[in-house]
Image (cartoon, rainbow, N blue to C red):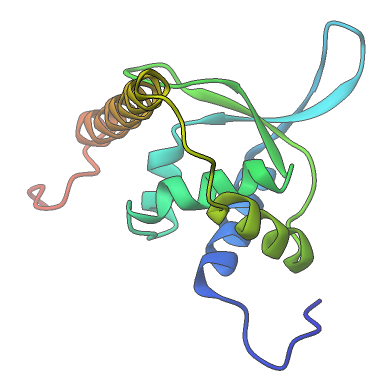
Amino acid sequence: MLEHDSAPPTLFEHVCRVFQAMQQRAVLQKTDDGQDILVYEGFTTALFNELELSIPYYTKVLRHLKAMSCVKQLRRGGGSAMSRWEVIKEPNFLDYEAAAVQIDRKLPAVSKQSVAEQMISDLTGRVDDLEEWQAAIMQALKNGDANGEPG
């Protein structure tokens, strides 16, 4: 898999683990044009919690999976709504390296308005992520999965 002498970065390992978990839970669905695709539907924050990955990895892992064309978001989650993702292809290290360059690339100077628009978009995404996380926590509490529950 790797053509390097060193171990892969931890982020790449997390990317692979999240992809595998999404792939295992995905179901085959037909698109409107009759094409079969694998679709993962769920709370991605709960998935990270289940995999015991810290939330700070959440954005980086999903950003890499999207940049590598491993997954495609079909519907954003938030609140009680689960997100839907097309599961496309397994991550590989060459794609990971290319995505890292793409993600880390410095962008040219932009207008104040576009910066403000991007900040609003980023904050909206973060709020959606927090709502999804909160919904997963509420569901866990509802199901009695919370730590400290009387035994």
